[in-house]
Length: 105
Image (spheres, rainbow, N blue to C red):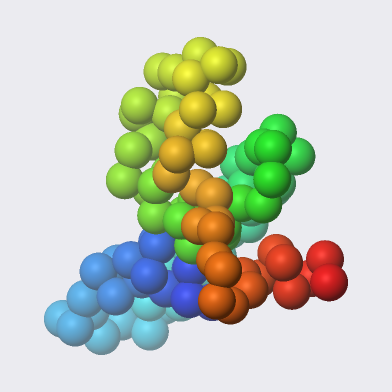
């Protein structure tokens, strides 16, 4: 799930285009992206998990924050909690369990 969120949410395929054949440039891009992902996890995702009421989906959180970074920065504390509740939470499932339910079981 972590790798899928990185790959899909951060759009790794779009950052490294096919025309780039310079090995140093490719490795630099990969390292910069990994550093950005570490910063995202430490400064955005973990505080969101602590702040949210309930379980937060990493994939949904990454996709939402990457696409809506300006709006997230401009929101207040109350609006931020509403955004997390609306866009970043696991959906409720009756027929199978989600990742958060699996860990708590």
